[in-house]
Figure 1 (cartoon, rainbow, N blue to C red):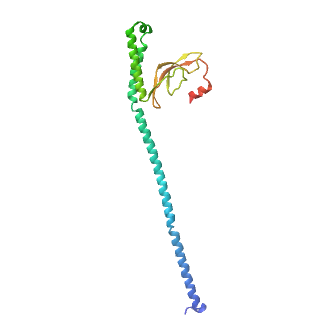
Figure 2: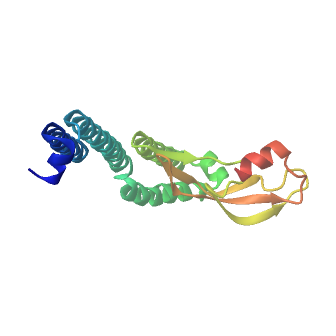
Figure 3: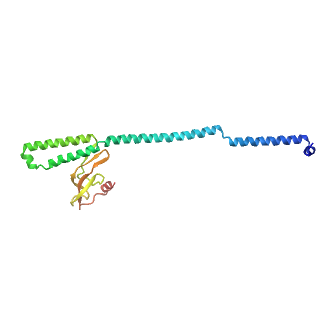
Length: 205
């Protein structure tokens, strides 16, 4: 019999050992509880992660779809840009031919007048065909000069017209879709009154 047994008795020694064992087991259980996460929490975390990935992927796919639709639309709209630009040179030559005919010659020569009318019909037909493919003619006469659509070639002194107003069109401009195919070459007024503030602000915008 040990001194501890002699001192406290056998029952007290056994109780002490059992208490120590129980405390050790409780400590082990607590450690396992800390080390092993709740399966439900794990599933929730995985679900949140998968949902986040799904939302990101869905957003990327939506952006890709929109870019593809925009690219296809642009390809359709601007695929004829090169051809249209070449046709504008033909239209310019037709207009120059018409402008070169003296007005009195048209009045006195029936055959020349008929020829001019045929050239005008050809010009209108060509511009109509271009317009059906999204090419639109710019007619800036009397408008405020806009560097986005116009190219100023010279200034025309005119005290009666607001500054920077288009008073002469040297060469017509054209747009295709929302793009400028060719800016209009124009002459702008100089020396006149300033444009109203509202118009000036609109031109600056």
